[in-house]
Image (tube, rainbow, N blue to C red):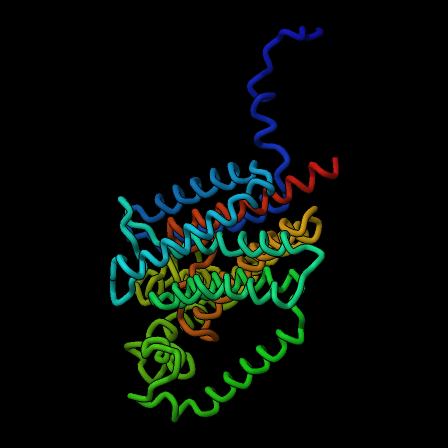
Length: 385
């Protein structure tokens, strides 16, 4: 039976262009991580009211945002870089002046609804620097990296002043990744790494002296100093500052190889793990699914990061390559810092575990970032056709 040229296209023929062309491997990794997140949230959030339902809703919103942003060509994303960066920095300045203060931190701004402007910079920073290096393609000089460093340090400084160490780390890392992929010389990177190694070694060796009560540290605030000192020896305040780290390590260790089983984590269900649905959800996951589950989670993140790096390597433009690389390694930063702080190898900072931790704003940010990565993957596929 032949179709007339006047026949109306079917529903599937209309929708298919909107849902095809996405990177299958990337989607699979996202679905695997999202499934792990829902499973963990069901157990960890059993007595948190609608937290499991809300987590699922946040995932759906992020998925819809990912699919929509994935339809936007990278050229249009590049056009958003300067306006989004300018608006983000302006909102940070407004937050410093008119912001809402909670628990000693001024991180929120009322613009009809209460928002956290620093979240905007997680996306705007890699966009802005990728746009900058695209403009300087073929004529990069040391001055160009200096300008990029200034563009990076302005929002990082404003966020650190709020204070919000976790978000400032994410913004800083996102910008540094772009600069690294743009060709920042190892002659500049190596001295910084060496200085950091020397500083960390000095802190560890002289911990007993520099962690004495009343001892002030340059640059860092008192609560940040306490986090570092608690990391070095959490038993100095087991019921106070060290409680989070100690309970997290107990939960992870008690999971053993195979875990205690779904919904059977005693540390989780007896509420020994603080923030068990947000920052410390990895401890709840490791307790119930054990070492094997933790390895499976690490492999899923490795698959996501590996696929993202492949997309970055095959990206058709400098902007796309830098943006995809920065977004991908930002996922690495999220996962590494969160798991590291829960495991007791990094200081406790407020960084969620992607797709696993509860949080609407963070989930929306992840969805937007994944959408940009999908957009770059789709543009690569279209150019190959």
